[in-house]
Image (cartoon, rainbow over all chains, first blue to last red; front, side):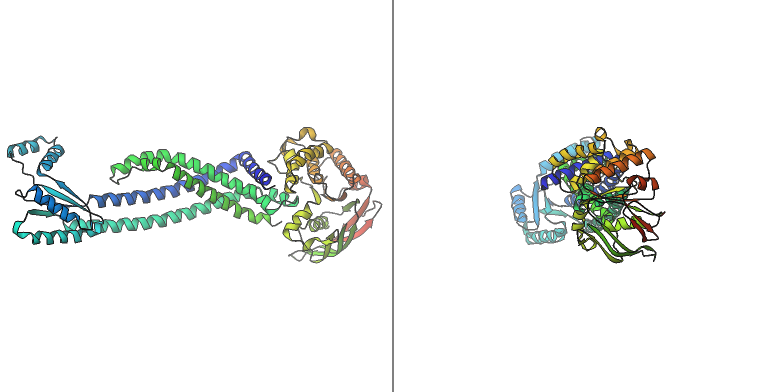
Length: 308
Length: 226
């Protein structure tokens, strides 16, 4: 009997969704706007986080060595530095590699290349590039490197440690800005979600208001509350599923346009690629959120008309 | 079968809808309740359908006080009482077949019973050929026939018809009354409200006249005061 009831409920809900096309269209549109707004706000959070990560990754420490420093001594030093638990990676760039990199980077600048050629000898020193696990640890790492430099003062191979506190300050302030933006983003998302839910709830309430006479007829022929409510909740779920599919489709061109833009801005993320690679997951979340929103709105809206 | 025991209904506004009503309706009776608009006829029906609660007194169906029933039991009780209204109250987005089937589905009948009984009920009211029409494709008389088919399909013990001919022309009025008489002949108690003297004369059975919320006359042979 449960299967029969379930079958009847789904059938009745689907028929009602189809036959009351204009009401369904209005509800689906409102739900689509709701889901789109919420997804866009969530996307902005993703872009902000990615931006912070990208900028953090750009921060590093370059240590330049004296011309006389042997590669062996540099590598020993680099291995020693690598042992520090705050350091993620140490990359050695030989003098030749630096020269090749420089030429490659400036290959279109004829004057620069010519000047380099005129010097004759390779003026670029060997260096190591140090990346921290946590950008907040750069200060500690610089102190650690300076201590190492003073310890080896007799046979100093370090020419220069390239890191200024300004970088650190910039990172710190950027960190604060992005954290604040994230918090604001969450607040905006909650605000939009609440407003959208209220609009959705009212739209579905209006849709059900149209059926109030029918609900009273259902009560008078002896239908139970669950029996009356179930098709309306089914319709609510259908609104959610259709809206989720429409939203997923609408987001394709939006993210496609925003994708190039986010990439050019240096956020470290292409929103379109992100959307494509998470499409199934996002669609699933939208279907669940839309269905829940539609079902709960219907469930609550019908309550008023069951008191016959 | 159905008893009003000294029933009074006062509305929040302080208006008295019905006062000290004592009526006893026996099984298989055809009872017409007559009275002018506002006399209290519809209030009586709402009390029977448990849409309203009496301020004083009790309404019993098969010796059970229907206003003491739990909500879930009210549904079961309503399935034993078929209802027909002046404005038909069909579900507009369902076909004639689906409207009748809905009452059976609500009563928890299985698909086989629905497939067998719905065409039969529509046949009984002469609308088998229009079972797939929607209400807005039917005339007033046809809509009322669908409503009657819906009311009888669960084989209720009683049918309440609230001004069922109020929106119909004389020919359809006559036919609907004949249909209700036919249903009554098959053993279902009928409780009909009307202010149409032609209808009362046509029925020619027990008539209860309501005036200013009170029983003014209860005549077993079709007499009334209007």
